[in-house]
Amino acid sequence: MSVSIHRLRRPARANESVGEPLSSSERALMMASAEQKLAELFEVLQIDHRNDDHTRETPRRVAKMFIEEMMQGRYSDPPALTEFENTTAYDELIVTGPIEVRSNCAHHLLPIYGEAFIGVLPARDGRIIGLSKYDRVVHHFAARLQVQEELVRQIRDFIAERTAPRGLAVRICAVHMCKTHRGVRGSHRSRMVTTSYFGQLETNKALQDQFLRECLALQQPN
Image 1: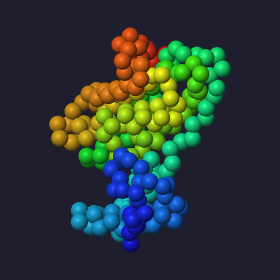
Image 2: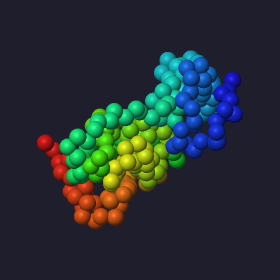
Image 3: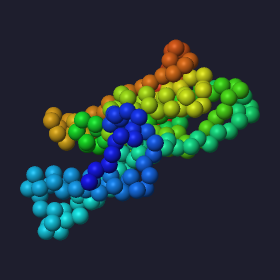
Image 4: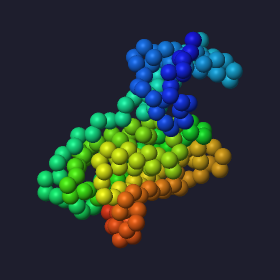
């Protein structure tokens, strides 16, 4: 049993949308197929998923976790953005964060966790989105097998395309468990920082410095 991929416009990379959102029947079919393949993997690894109380339902649970949680950002529409008129023509920098990042590395399927910060320089005659929507955008694009350098750009591009700000910045600071739990087995204090700029925040060093200062201030404990 497998899900046909012929309906996709093109082969989707691990951190890209597959195209149209999956229907409930397509999700069910994909989950059943994934469960079967995971059961086969357990058999290759000599893990008893039929008689062991601990692992009897694990292929089903893991298949559901992949499709409904870890990679649901590939199979669903991005969040709708609630927009408000910029009635006061506010045009100063807005910074929000920390926004929790929970993702998984495309290379080893291990967790990435950390914080995101978003800076927006709105247009005086433009629109401003609801504050919680920034969190939803981050969560949507993080719910894929990700590469952190690309995640910041996906978030940046989506917000820039939908809101047309004068400037935008996205910064993520995260721990990669593919480094802490395998290979070098590095410290959890070791993090990776990526930042992506758009518009005036890409060209104005003073605005970049202001954004980074605000990120630092938001990281301080209350």
